[in-house]
Amino acid sequence: MAGVEEVTREEIASGLRELGVRDGDVLLVHSSLSSFGRVAGGADSVIDALLDAVAAAGTVVVPTHTWDRIRGANAVFDVRKTASCTGLIPETLRRRPTALRGLHPTHSCAAIGPMQRELLRDHETQVTPCGRKSPYQRLMDCGGKIVFLGAGLHVNTSLHALEEMAAVPWLFDRFEMLYTVDYEGRKRPVPSRRHADDRHRDFGKMGPVLEREGVLVGGRIGKAEVRVVEAAGMEAVVAPMLAQDPFLLLVPEVAE
Image (cartoon, rainbow, N blue to C red; front, side, top):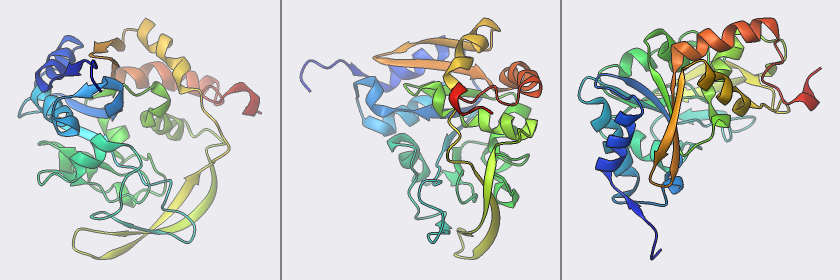
């Protein structure tokens, strides 16, 4: 990869601060390592930069989803062993000794920082992936921020949480009995409503709306496009829109 510009841990942390990340923040981070081009130290340096940016009082959360593999006959999620489908940065963070991973079988998150237990506890008690006790809704309650490091807004799981909060009528299409194996090796049943696979979203169209309302700021760190969204501000903007139009976030051809 000769000639590819390399970005450092210090540059990533500095770039995040320029975009409004502060000491003590709670960040939910969607990421693409390759979007940077090359990072000195790889995924670990990105994680360290995020932790630097929020300092010791802050918490970094990443999605460690397994909805692509925990389904049907393969119904058992092992919090210690089941790999996530969300990329190298989340997979690297969840393996750190200081990380805690939630127990939801399809939409778990992992976190490092003083808020980790508060954000992740009891997620597996929810029948839906992004319910009231999910980290996605709790992030809105605690004034957290959603960071997109080279990842597009189409991966914004928190918009699924707003769909659940609005009780849009098309969100779920089936029920499955899933199971979680916890850190002590105990197997727990988790009755689960599953998102409809054939409902395609256009989350990206909310970007200009959130930017116009002052709850999204964007910039670049190295080669990566980075956006920071205030979670509670996003709720304040999008929730009334969903209440008025429950098909708001669907691509037009699948809306009924």
